[in-house]
Length: 100
Image (cartoon, rainbow, N blue to C red):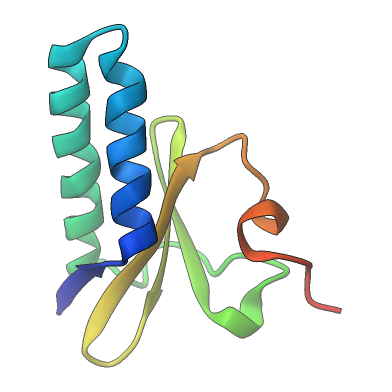
C-alpha cells in the first residue's frame, strides 16, 4: 500500500521542523525525517491505530508519535496522511464539530 501526504500535512511537517529549527536546526532535520518515516510506516500497519472517536463518519485514524499526532485515512489502494499536529490540539479544532 502506498502513502500519500496531503498538502496540509506537508505544511504541518514543514511548520514543525521550522519551529524546532529555531532552537536546534540539526534536531529539526532529524525529527522531520522521523515524522516522515512514521507517516510512511502506515503503509504496513494502517489498521493498527484506532478511528478517531466522534469523527467516525470520516474514517480518520490517529497515530501518535512523541508529542505529535498523525491523522490519516485509508482506502483500498492508499493511506492518506491528512494532518500532523501537536497532541495538545483538539480533534474538534482540526476536523470541526463532533458527530451528533
